[in-house]
Length: 399
Image 1: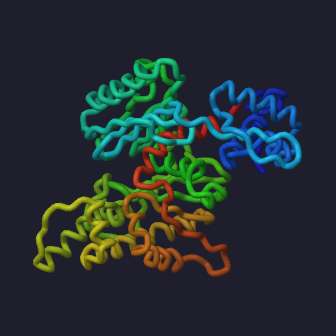
Image 2: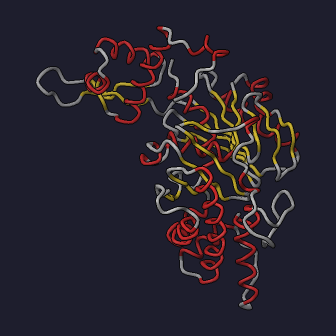
Image 3: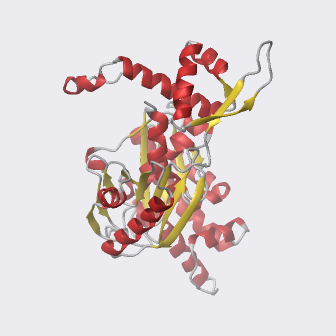
């Protein structure tokens, strides 16, 4: 049971407009999840009056959120008019900042990318600010008649309450006010979030159905570092100033093959990140007197999937440390599921056994078993996460 805090009571009282907003949210999500669907079906499923459903549908159509797509089969009376989300119309701008590249894209209500621009990420914060704002401004000029909002995913600590990036370890950036600057220069409202949290939100709203129905889970993003997003009771747990989930710095071993962004060789990130996988692979090539040419993680995973011994070995050795960290998360937080995201998830068949073995070693047998899954967001999870910062608000609060 959630506690009601009296200092916030004025905003928590169930006024008539609150009830209307909740009903509107319910109808919109029925259309989202079960389209094509008719007004009559929604009324039967929700026990709302048909007149109430019709009024809400009219409102949602006027707001440009849903649309008619023709008639369905009759069950004895008039043929029902079927509804679906309105797609093809720009709704959300996603800004996905990663250590190597930054993507700015626009999506419709269903999360379909309508257009995008990608450019290399620079360590110069001022330069990057201008690059991002110019890219978003181009969209503002192209879609002047649409009320767009911006979601920004970053590989660091972001405090949503003040709209500021507090720290990005890879670039050593502090107090980056990119959200406020986007709003000031373009007029678009902007929301900023840590990349792993954004992915967790995307899994909750746009992932596989089994993930959307899971109320307590943790996402583990394996990238240049290790990020975790925690979903408790269907909501992101951010902690104070957005600093929760920094499990990439917990100690899982010693003498890692690479250093963590904090400089340590004991952290989970140092043992289980993409850079650790690549280091192990290159070491194995050297030991086998094979070429030590530079390889990126996508190429390495492709080699492993095609059966190359060294690539498979590097992935499995890294998966052992990834599993140790996941085991610690399970012991401490007891989630229903842990979802692994990043390019490594493309090799799920090769690493799942190792992850499961390590994760189960320290879990008591009489506790519910935590399910391990690969992400269902494809090869651009952080971009989808950026979109979700805008789109989830529309589905969670349609008032």
